[in-house]
Length: 329
Ligand code: ACO
Image (cartoon, rainbow, N blue to C red; front, side):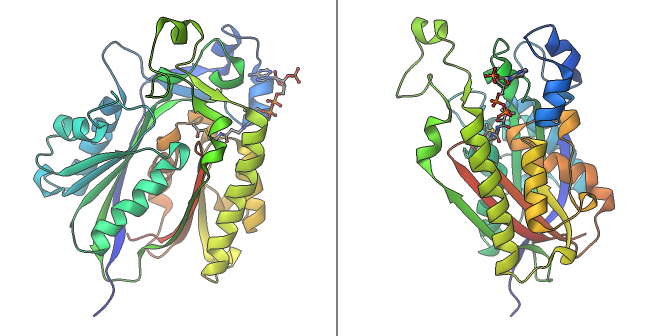
């Protein structure tokens, strides 16, 4: 009997309409378009504006679009996983809320927190439910309202992040396509360099934590940069070597979009050219869980069945990983 794999059978992105440009940031903090572009490659990012709107609202738009596009009824969905570091609330899970907003009843649904590697962690987890024939249709979401945890008084971090959501449909296939292999890793000692100081059980919210601006992303840019460059490039090269893939076999590298310099280093290490790399960081910034589905969504029309695609990410935790997949449609 042929092996069952999880194939991506649809992808949908969603970004809020408001665009925050580098020019606008120049008026908010001591920075410049030149600095941001040369250090990160980001020119603008989308921001979710409006009272009472959270990550689930963006994710629900992506999920509703995905259901429509793939001709799927909400009741056919067996599992929804939402990769996010900006859940609507600490509990319930944003995945539960998205299901409610998208009309998905009785599905098994939960959140996954692996920061910028969250989408890859969720994709690998979701694929196991397909491979074991536990579910026939799984939706994997990567969604973050990073503007809700970004300190717009800190020039070190506020230039980096944007808001977005993406949703991916996984279904079983017996063809030689779908998720072929993955390498996922983490090292919790990296938490000291990239975290949110307060709001969790270790340091619950208080007047003091708010005064100290501890409910925002805290990042020591340089150590994170060093780890990210090494780990993302290493893991992408490792999955290629493990599966005897040469650079010419790879149709696309889909890297997490945190910094153009990290993306370039990963591409160089894999030996792939610029035309083999999906890059849209200039228009969206780092949308954490949203970056990889946004790329796949924007490049969807260029992809061909059987294309070898390498996904690679690095994020808070530290977490990092790579997936080799063959495009299924
Ligand atoms: N505008 C102007 N100057 C700035 C800005 C800014 N927005 N931000 C920092 N600077 C200054 C610094 O104060 C510093 O000045 P000094 O030399 O006078 O002290 C100088 O620029 C250099 O600062 P660095 O932090 O060394 O700049 P670097 O080249 O490292 O770039 C950056 C910073 C873009 C954050 C980079 O370190 C980076 O990309 N790090 C990795 C990010 C990442 O991959 N994160 C993981 C995913 S995120 C997640 O998981 C949620």
